[in-house]
Image (tube, rainbow, N blue to C red):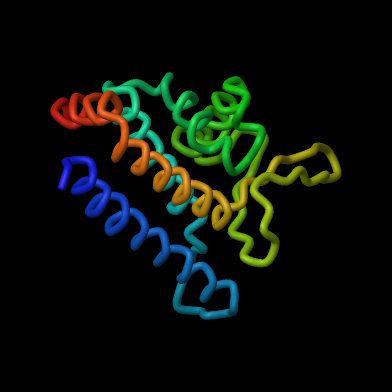
Length: 172
């Protein structure tokens, strides 16, 4: 098995997906009235997803840089949400949600949602004073999982991509 397969098997499919699915499960329990849990894990789940996207964008480019996250989003997420075809949208999405959550504990003029009923990814909600963009975590997770499967498949068949992956892996 190649290095990327080992990393994906353990770090992506076991650590990341198993943990995220536990977050989603606990959030569903909380929403159904289970009083054992205080938080709905929106914040935790969303930041974890962005962390994995950052890690994989570094593998994708062979180096540690936040500026390349937009390239990864454009390449792998545009298959699931058309707006990501625009690199500027990808960059803005990352800045608003990831940086907002990481640095200000809230996305900039936006919000995150843990909605298991509606299958939306991004939705504008009009409030009294403003329009807020909501990111739905369960859909974001599904898009991320599919994008990571696509990336792993590309690694299986593209030697240059594997070399970049290995280059970044050695730097860590």
